[in-house]
Image (cartoon, rainbow, N blue to C red; front, side, top):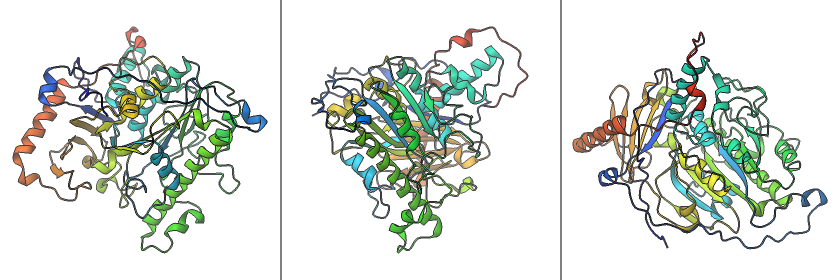
Length: 490
């Protein structure tokens, strides 16, 4: 039973508006409570955070695996698995009768699932920077602009070295960390990982030596998880963070025939069939990762988190974003993702919740589970009370802003409540959906509710005026300004 309602998150000191005309992608997902909550800080009932864990019983293991068994009560290992370009509804546990995802379904069935979580962008980089740093993209770009003014450099992907990334924060309490797959921000070392595959920074649509082929290759030779297993076998008794982001079901849709098999007799167009095959390929990879942990005796002390970095719609075409309904759009399918937390014996199983949440909360939640100091300049909250005790933490209102260069339909604002979803593009086109009855936004009812349009315009105006992101800590930003001759583009 819930012990109390801490209400929606409302920043107590939003600070001045932070703007930057040099942002390549400007995305923000901010929270607004009801008007009463905006006028006062909700009083929260303190919740205990006692773990449920029973004593860890070490089983007979191969000699090379015994060294990985972690004593009960130690900090958990953390494995973050990130799907890439996947619709929130394209899982068996989310209600799909077509797609086959038995391994991810099992994680959901044996853990806690938040079905109504929203990314801070409908494309990968802003969403991943939030997961990696806990920062809103607006906070990110504001800090980058300050660094450029102070240090006189363009920064590029190496700018991540000035951010308190998740692996950097966990290293302070003894974690080793590993990066595999897409993370976008420089090399693994610059991003703060102790180990990883990204030995060169990524460039747009050219992923050379950045680890983005991890999980997509090696199936024929049975080596798909090999880079991860090599890290696990070297980590010893220290807790670890593994960033597992295999760029799936992201195009190209080039899965092997075994992954097409479940869909061969269905009446699907080739594009949909390829998309579903890549999803089943991702699911098989998730199962392989879980198997690797189990065989090394690590599963009982490993917290697994699963989510997507952004959404997708089967009609989307990567090179035709002007008509997108998922990725690069302002529609729900672009932002929404299920969020799974699974840790046997420590997190309840079989729990499904519909709280309206933001992925901004993932970073502080993982710091909490690792018993690491919180980052006080971040806007997220630890979801641990909701995960372990069922505490109500859903937001009443979620406001988002996204700017995608050269894609006008994907640039603008949205407002999401339990009942409504409002969209206004940068050129003023308005759409309104009864999201509780129309989850795929098929019927625009804007013309029937002029009073709701006015209300949501006011909410966005209030957000623009008073709910901007708080600045991140930036000691380097206090340096003396240095003239720069470099580009100002990230």
